Picture (cartoon, rainbow, N blue to C red):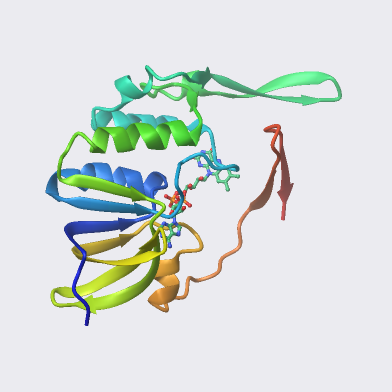
Length: 199
Ligand SMILES: Cc1cc2nc3c(=O)[nH]c(=O)nc-3n(C[C@H](O)[C@H](O)[C@H](O)COP(=O)(O)OP(=O)(O)OC[C@H]3O[C@@H](n4cnc5c(N)ncnc54)[C@H](O)[C@@H]3O)c2cc1C
């Protein structure tokens, strides 16, 4: 049993889309958000925010502010084959308040949400903080994270594992995801061209 360096209501592991949105929604009640990377600027992240997400952000009072940031709006989607371009999707027909796909780098989106969470003094984020273990403390289960070579301990009423598809927490908990097949694979190139292979 170890003493905790940090006590919080919600300990959230991972500042991807899931972690930052959860952190923003819970910030008022006390959140410590831990992110392994030192910034949000990573390769191979999606740049599209779809209408359904924009509507949720609107309900959270964030859509208008988000759309003040540099972005592009994709209203239609075309396919060019043998020199002929055909429009295959028209988002203007969706009936959404946001009848387009918002194109914005994911790092900009994540920074925006974290900035809004920072408005609450009950929220804090530690970048470069990699969760490495689970532990027990005087108050219950906790997590250990490593930052600049130093190991710290967090106890929280609830630990939220938002650390992505290769989740460390999931491995530490010895939980085994059920493998399912996916309808397609996607290859992603730096120049933002996409090739889809149906399997
Ligand atoms: C090539 C590609 C393109 C995509 N394009 C789009 C798109 O255009 N639009 C869209 O909506 N979705 C897109 N997606 C899907 C989208 O990126 C994912 O659905 C989304 O990132 C999942 O969010 P998440 O928060 O669950 O996990 P992640 O985004 O993976 O975030 C997990 C976070 O946890 C951190 N972390 C991991 N381990 C630890 C640890 N031990 N301690 C602390 N932190 C840790 C990671 O550094 C990371 O920041 C794309 C995915 C890929 C791979």
